[in-house]
Length: 316
Image (tube, rainbow, N blue to C red; front, side, top):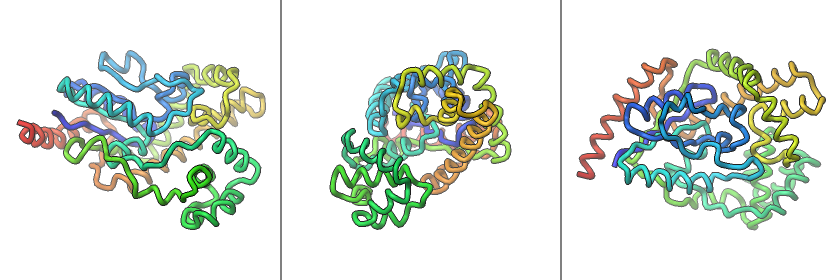
């Protein structure tokens, strides 16, 4: 059995091209770990790899979910587990790539045992969040989960809503579940993770150029198609980077220029948060600051082959 290769990094950092090259060089197959690239309706907006980019390398968990669904980390974890086990039986390397750090954290450290929240509770909390904002959510949460209410700031409306809906659904603060984790899918020495950390100025420039390219490739048409379906704007797919601004433009509420600039800004801010996540959640993952594909490959091959030989020895 070969250890899985995990590749994480901020949006537009070149993860896709690197994962495909790693899989091609090491007889592997690619498994998606990006929460937006699972949606079949977001091919352009999520920068999902196309057939030319895949270059004949098998890809899994890309574009297989309807945008009308609320796809969860738990669902991804179960599907990823099944794909990994199949690849292990075939003696193939699993190359797991994406910008959703929570997916990779759950894969290697286990998923918090929070039970599913009923849809009626979610709807109730969404209404409260819209009417009262983050401050209202915090005031409601504080008597029941003071630790979380104090820790989360006014810019964390989504996390405040999540904590409040968990309390409504279970009668327990979300912190109660943090130490209750399911076993990880990949144990130590069954995987090796790499974090791409390109220079920020260069990355932000690439984010801007990539969004402009998405507009040329049909991002607006994707947004209009989703709007015409009348989907709930709170669905994850409707919150994909740039989607809310494209939707506002499609409804005639803002100009194309205003939509594009704000979409780029939000995506740059997301990339900044991804850098922070890497620093906090994956402190021991080898960093790859270079941007050239060949340089990245040399780092991965040099470090990975050592652990691959050790694992082969363990299972021989």
